[in-house]
Length: 566
Image 1 (cartoon, rainbow, N blue to C red):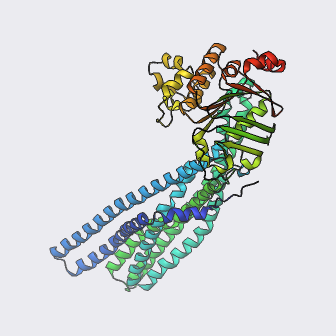
Image 2 (spheres, one colour):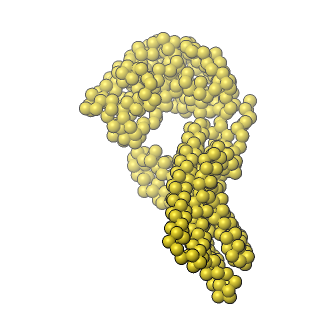
């Protein structure tokens, strides 16, 4: 039975609307303050023209003092409105970017359908660069409105002097925006392609870092580097294309803005020469022509930033709208329950059926590694319930009826290649800092010698992917983390393959002792772990073919003896 995907698609336009909607308060205040800033900037040349006009009529010190006071008020308004307006907008921008980063990271950690076509490196790029560029819309809209206010105020002021000057500003601005809106579409498409190629390059780097050790082992590092170089070169060429498009856009905008300013200045000069405007109005017109360059530049840049924000939002939608592998139910399993596999068919598994009673320590000796991997993947919920036949029950509840969060809180599946993170030994064992069994987990996993080797003990630094630890140390650190989680049901997949025989035997006894009374399943071929288990299930050709204690199986099953004896 296939569970329908009920996650609502979130296109790029919807993401932008959501960002704008939940920041409406900050954007309103930012728009008001930035509008005051632009109005103050516009008022400066207007006031200067009025001062010239007034001073030529009344040359007394009172008029001069009044003029200086008016300019001081304008300058103060400009300074404070810019300072507090940008503070509000940048805080909202940063907060919104953080929200989307967290949202993308949350979706990226969920298993999604394989046809989503997303890799971890791409998700990383989307969660950083694209989240930041999407949140820029919070600043873009207020700046766009405030720039429009400045242009309109300038057009009205010039229109009061002479209607032709006002019309020239309005018509010129509309013409400039028409030209630039066409060019901004090219920027949007080029930016989307650049972001996709940069994300692919990031994904390639992540893959190379993950496989660096085996690549060095068989000498494939040079070929892998050549593969990355090809992807990176494609990203570089696209970045150059985007830079060229941006350069053409900026150059065109600057040229058109300058042409409009020159046109206003020359027209004002001709009107003053013809006696149709006064000297003060000429000073105002020339000042506005110079000032209008800034809001026009800001205004003309906005379509570009809107297209970039939209392109990034559409990239984020690839993650946010990616369907999950399965829709799980709302139920939670009861504490202290067991685990049941009922006629499961998937991959190498053929009607697999067994039960791990509550509180039991059971080991599975899998003769085929593929079958062990398929079983671990199902228990780790990496395979959706609708992808296999049969049922998996946790504490009597079917896996499909349980929420994914509840399953992971109740049952921990520790893979044989558990990831090690940069930080310390302690943060790798107890990432949340809430475990009360760290000391017991360290002792049970025989990690005590690693802790004792370093003066900082558990606070000893661990490099990315455990680069400063041996294979056995990394495996024991991963095991300690699984034991410290103290989950109701613990599933371990080959937890001691890189550990020597003596240490392995001590670890097996410690696991049995620490996990006494709690449900534990170990998928392994280790004689020490098989011997420590209450009972052993033999998994051969996808089904359970034998069940007994390790020692009884050794004595009575020659095939089992050959498979597990070392």
